[in-house]
Amino acid sequence: MNSLVARSGMDLRFGLPVLMAIALALPAGAQELAGPSVPAPNWVPWTALTKAPAAFDDTGLELVVRAAYTAAVDFAAGHDNYFARDGAVAPLHAAIAEALATTYPSVAVPDATIDGVPSKACLTAPGTALRVSSNVFGDGLWLTAVSGTRLFGYAYDPHKSGEIVVQPATACGR
Image 1 (cartoon, rainbow, N blue to C red):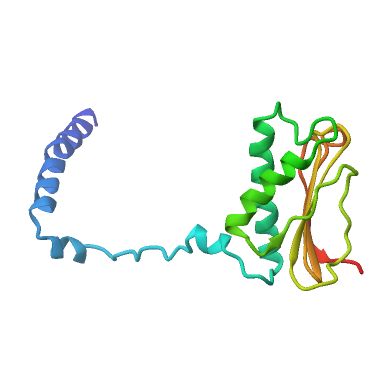
Image 2: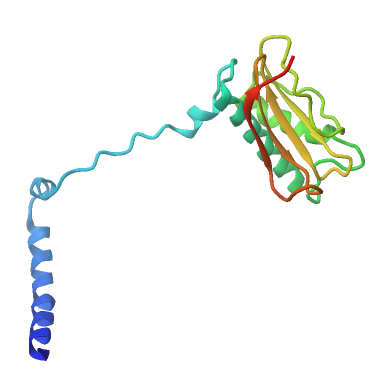
């Protein structure tokens, strides 16, 4: 048995380089014929997902909130991990509005508030708006993208939970 294992190992040791040499010597066309070719994936570029139309569907509302949350987190990272300090939400509002202006120029960003959860009312005029609110401590954040019929939101209040609560797209109220 030991001689069989040793002989098999010897065959592999000498056979593998020979197989590699044969494969390398084949013309490129012959190598392609050796197996099926896999088509390249047809990926949708990320920029196509971030350039949403003026009338947003549920996915568009979510992308607006994600972009706003990214801007808010970047802002907080430069301000001792606070979204707002001492009731000053204007700098946070400006950072979010600036970030959305290039990617989602049709989204209105009304003034931010410090009163907790933003209104769930629909817009009365056509369009899309992002409602921004912080808690009184400045470490919580509510972002709600709303249209004339739908809304989608993120809520983060570290005094209630360490997780971001996602409010899936739903019909908004009147």
